[in-house]
Length: 216
Image (tube, rainbow, N blue to C red):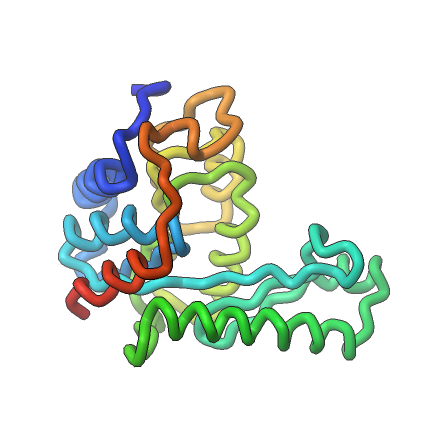
């Protein structure tokens, strides 16, 4: 199984959906949250396989001013903000700087949510089993931020599901979620796109269309 590439995100999602249906217990009332944009075609197939509603979960990193690659926190769908106090203290970020960065990223998050979801409200995850889906995991930094933000929304269980991921990343994430499903962990992993024959970028319009077609 290892080393075999997926044809595209649709095939990857179909295989992932079958695995989840066979392996994960207690998902009859689950919600599928996909990380845009590439996670949405995968998540759509997972939601179809499970008969579950689909939504996006958007995460925006809060970068330290002047060192944007260093994350001092993240914001996510649902108005959640999580902060890394160690980084904030180390970088001596003032409350004013933090608020300025957060405001900028909140505007972008709101723009993307409107683009993807339209007028539909976000799904309520409280006390539900939530399956977070992406098209793959390299470093896993975005997925970790998503899990941390989602935890603040008090779901019943968090399941992370991806078609492919770096073995170490999948192992590390397994320690912070209720269940981790990663179909393939080829080594060396290098990049998610290497494990797809077709890794064409998913467009905003495609994300919107997939969400619109999914019953809620």
